[in-house]
Amino acid sequence: MKCNKLGLYCYELYDSSTFKASFIAYEKHRLLYKMVLFFTSIVCSFSLFANKSDTTRILFIGNSYTYASMGEQNPEIPFRLKEMGALYNKNIQTGFVVKGGAQLEQHWKEGKALQMIQNGHYNFVVLQDQSSAAFRSLNSFREYAAKFDSAIKKSGGKTVLYMTWGYADRPKMGDTIAYEYNRLGKELGAIVAPCGLAWKCFFEKNPSVELHISDKSHPRTEGVYLNTCVFYQTLFGKISTKVLYTIKNKNITIEGDLANKLQSAAKEAIILNSDYGKQQRLNQNPYFQSPSADINQVIIYGQSLSTGQQTAPVISVKNYAGNLMLGEQVWSNFSNNLDT
Image (cartoon, rainbow, N blue to C red; front, side, top):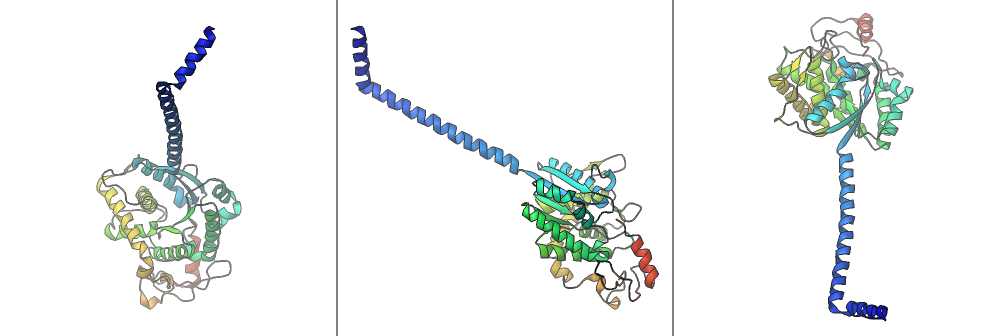
């Protein structure tokens, strides 16, 4: 009897408008709770995705121009770029395949670089060939840069060509290097990091500041700093002037006025390089102009062989210092020193 009364009471309570209102309110709250959980999960997913996308992964393939003074196990350019990124709130992760004197052809044939491209999920892959490749082994440079570029694109990344610079005693090298890197960059649709052009811009305004070490080829810390600025501005845009990136080690400190000058040269080079085709006439390689057109011509090279090597010069010209450079022996001496 009591159970029947209780059941009747519950039925009456359920049937009452008060209970119905309470029940509907409960359902609304439960639905709202589910919606909150759903949208929270969406926001969290986007947050995780954003954190992942905020990380830029960069692979460097090159030689001693990439690792500089810090060696193959901890290359200096990637290290400095990560350091600069941290200062400007950019999460940069780097990988590297570097070997002293290596060309892109060697890296391709050894396979490690290609494997890292295919498996590393890199946003950018930086290609740096041997310092004289733009004229001594041009065919090889173009062929293997194109092969790497194809693999990089298939992996969803972007190719960055690391434009190097002329030797301290052969500054006109830089003109041909700039020409060939830009020509190839245009053909491949690749990004060109105009480090070599930045060196030229810096020297024009600061001729007394050394960027090369004593071998007249590799970069001092100042040169590394300049290259780092070029890479950062090429890939991420303008550097903040409110916080100045500095390098301090036992040998040298780069800060203040010098740091500002180096950053300015990097910025100037990027602006100039964006219009390089118009300024340098990309249909014409500076090293192959008539010697009468420029007394500062370093050397006139012969025709390219099928291997990509250049033959000995067919004529003699004056170099930038005005010294007469003669025939086969000059070419032999010159090419034997191009080993970076």
